Length: 92
Image 1 (cartoon, rainbow, N blue to C red):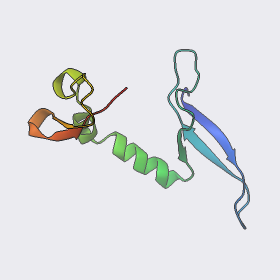
Image 2: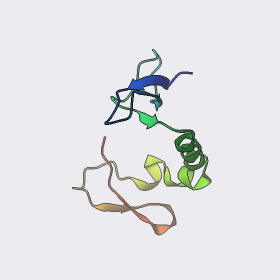
Image 3: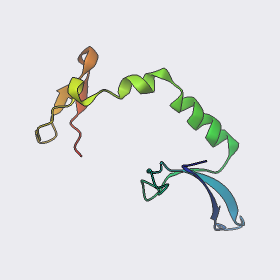
Image 4: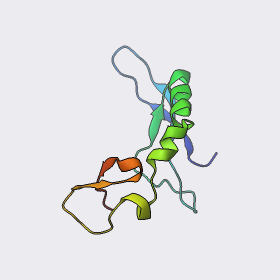
């Protein structure tokens, strides 16, 4: 699956090495977009991440740039988004 990597983690203390999944978006050439992805070590971690990502409130937090973020650099002031909520200014 693009964006899912199997990673062998070194042992820590009395625990031996373990296998984890790393979730990291990939570009059109299949290269990781980020230096480090989200590490999943247990099934419970995967279930919790899945629950978070499928929550419809998450989509509502992702506001289109033209609706909430001023494109000018304002020194980090809050800008008003939909429903009158303020969000920190975000930069590229």
